Amino acid sequence: MRVRLAPSPTGTLHIGTARTALFNWLFARHEDGQFLLRIEDTDKERSKPEFTENILEGLNWLGLNWDQEPILQSKRIQEHQSAIKALLNRGLAYRCYATEAELEEMRESQKKKGEAPRYDNRHRDLSPKEELKFKEEGRSAVVRFQIEDQRSITWNDLVRGPMHWQGRDLGGDMVISRRAPFDEIGDPLYNLVVVTDDAHMGITHVIRGEDHLSNTAKQILLYEALGLSIPTFAHTPLILNSEGRKLSKRDGVTSITQFRELGYTAEAMCNYMALLGWSVPEGMDEKFSIKEISKVFSFNRVNKSGAKFDWDKLNWLNGQVIHEFTTEDLFNQLKPLWIHQGWELPGPEWCFDLVELLKPSLNLLNDGIDQARPFFETPILQVDGQKQLGEDGALEVLRNLFNNLEKEPWDGLNANRGKEILKFSAKSAGVKMGITMKSLRAALLGQMQGPDLLSTWSLLARVGEDRNRLSSFI
Ligand code: GLU
Image (tube, rainbow, N blue to C red; front, top):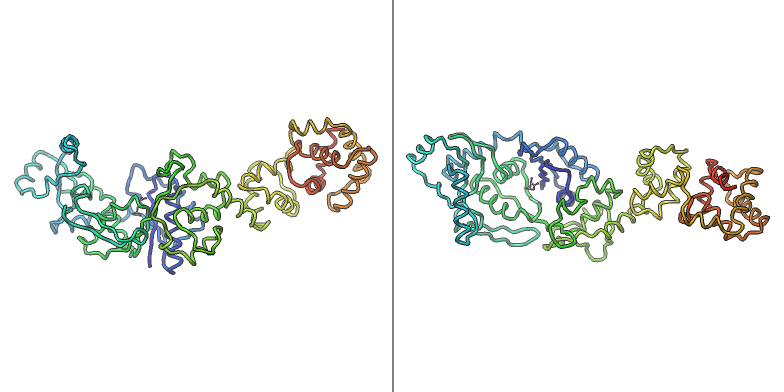
């Protein structure tokens, strides 16, 4: 069992391609097969090595490991051309000399008659004399593969069940190589190239988006004509935006790099992408790892209809994943983000305690930047913090606390001792514990929101920051 992902490196890794990769990966792992990569870099103008790099890096990050060195399609052009020659020699393909202007005229007249645009196969049976005339005119030619209108094409799709196509719905004889001077073969085109390469790689199952359905019909004809065995096909539903249209670049965040930069975890992305089109078997949780799902994955549970992208669900899953990370794993994810802020990190124990403290309130990894900020930078006093410090007795109790800490500095380690100091500072100022605690929060964090106060104070005390911050209010 061999499957493949065949991305074109004309952009960064799109979530649609990543979801296709995931379904291929899950199927391969479930069946103990191989998951291969082929970089479809034949579009010389739009393909860029940095996009290939981005795609591989994105798949790696998602944990979708592949089993062999990726194949570069552009290295196989000679084989593609041999396949075209074979089809020409067997009379299954021919050169079409129609000029762009002639083709345009043909389409215009079809439009006027209310017909769907298609190539009218006008050069299918040229005589040698007619060909010679075109040659003398200096015309260039594309190669076209013959598609009989009355041919019916069927396959049993793993997602969509029995599929039927008619040759007449495929737009006339198909172009398989770009325009080239007389007698030459130009750059081979998508359908021909994919068939040649999939056969070369021994692909048994082609799993891709349903936007390729008509290509599959054309490709089956090419497999037959080239005498190659036809793989099994599975066409996955499209990912739709909130309006029910195909998710596209215009929808904003669509590339895996963007999701990553926003603070989504690879685990949540894979989990969520699996739910985009695949429904969980009864009794199974909606939160799972790709390893868990690969054990139960089958195309029986892949839906035919499009899958709407749901940010709330992704955010919820991401939060779940973060909350289940071990402290060390979460620290390893946050550390580069903190270092990137230019923050100097105290020892690992302190960092682990901070991670533990913040973990329950993180939904995105990037929340761990904003929420950690007051532990690394002196906070700016917010309106609510300022209001609290204006309460009766607030500054007095803080002054008491500061003086007590000068006398017997608390290193943040013994929580009971911390509480005691807080209590007698409140008592001697004649201020209630509630006001004392709130004022301490305002002085330490500059605002009234934040994690557990004693743990916050303890962390700041361990780096001497509590006295530092209190000192500005006395
Ligand atoms: N390069 C094609 C794409 O990215 C591959 C489609 C296929 O899987 O055959 O859409």
